[in-house]
Length: 463
Image (tube, rainbow, N blue to C red; front, side, top):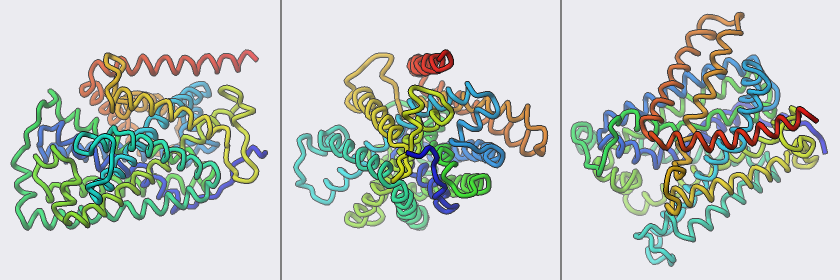
């Protein structure tokens, strides 16, 4: 076994990682959530997408500056370690390894399975299911759950056995997923303007059962899941060729593509269906209305591939989590987790740990969010609540960058970081206003998991 990862990804692959990890299920199913949270107010929804994209871009630019200066094993941990200190870098790595990346990965695997089942039941109305599609079988049925587990295992195997294949899959699915987004953005805009549907949606709100007292905050918080994930691309900076030059480029180019695609797609969707239809049935109704039943369902298959590409990108980041800790001599059994397979050039032990944690978060996601088997304070939204902690943890890194990096220009040292701090504060505030007491219960779980990481860290120090 060797203990060093090889540089195997170029700039184009790195850009596809950024775009492919972020653009996935979020834009497809969070578009419906944004409309619901704004009470069917389309202009307010567009503003929410624009604010979410702006926050992502200023944070992304700030971290791209760090990427030009710091480079070791895992970008985000490198930045935290270099600015705040080694212990903070460890805790950030522990958080992303045990909470942030696995929680998102488990949810994305389910979304991939859900859209697969929706495609099958639409193409074959008599498709046999234990729970009929009309009764939620595509969401919580055993077929969907089994397919979720298959997708998780398949993506895990691809990343662990052939990381180059996983990189090619990421590039391919990134290109493929742009097809339905571009079609809806362009055709939806034209159809909407021609039919008058787009103008109608801008002046007519839909009806929802209940709206938030702070609809803009709630909507921005919903967009956060769709925009999150770009930081995962930094987890492979040790495998990107000339990463000090290519990783910042990939972050900036990828971020601009993401923000533009999201806003124009959301507007295009508004041209294909009424606000009420979008609130009740989601964005897929716009595809069907514009492209017809057959082609609309084919585009649903493209959405499946899009979601699988995002799941692959998330798994790519997850599988390297324990390795990044172990490469620094941190975490449990570093000698075990820093091993890299000679044939595949992958940290296999780290990957196995990641799959186990992802499975645990999927069990929680199913019981608390899908089947609603668990009730009470600790049944929180595991796809949105980690946003509050990740943006809180960004803030010390950004502040320390501003304090320490005296050789940077005013723009790089103060202007963009200050905007990023404001964006982080806005996201935290939006999350609190949107989820209220659920934030407290999530933070208790967060504190417990971080305390476990602290015990492992202190144990290492005393050995």
